[in-house]
Amino acid sequence: MSLINGISNNIRVFEKLASKQDSDKANTPPPQATESSKVTLSEDAKALANFTNKGIAVSMKEFDTPLTKTNAAGSSAQFSNSIVTDKKISKDDFAALLSSLGVKETDQQDIISAFDTNSDNTISHGEILKSLSQAAQNNSPLSQSILNLMDKNGNNDGQVSAQEYANISTRLYDAES
Figure 1 (cartoon, rainbow, N blue to C red):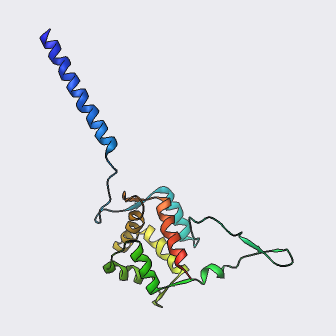
Figure 2 (cartoon, rainbow, N blue to C red; figure 1 turned 180 degrees about the vertical axis):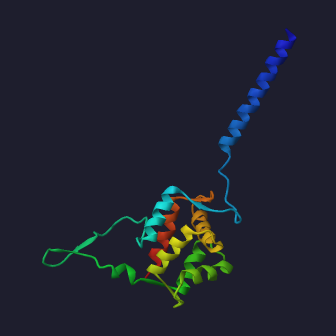
Figure 3 (cartoon, rainbow, N blue to C red; figure 1 turned 30 degrees about the horizontal axis):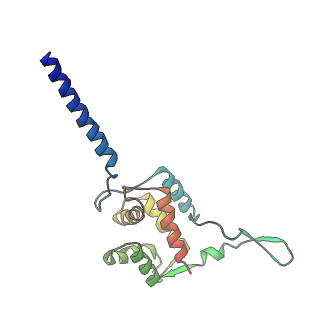
């Protein structure tokens, strides 16, 4: 009988250990992405990046104005594309935005240069779309910096979700004047 009692006691100890490990796993936060780890896009974020690649801005804003405007005669007219595409961000305002998003000053110039593809010291709407699209499509150090920025301003789990992608996109679009 003592052998059976000993085995029974050991089983209870193992069950307690297993239960404690399960509890510890449940209370452990998700792993944090490190500066050296590769950040990827979730499938939903890839879909948003695909829109961006086609020149379609993705934003997390709610529509507070209709997509059409009504003139005095009561007929509707579509908004012109120039309303969106003429907007630009100055280099200084872009640096301030990057700083507010937690980008180190030493990394800001590289990101600004990557976004300002025509070197006119402003970042246009088209340059934002192009840069976000390129960040999602290749694995260069600069692309990883942009994806890290998206992830760090989210849950920092090493994968950019659609929400994280759209949040940074929205911040960039909102900065346009």
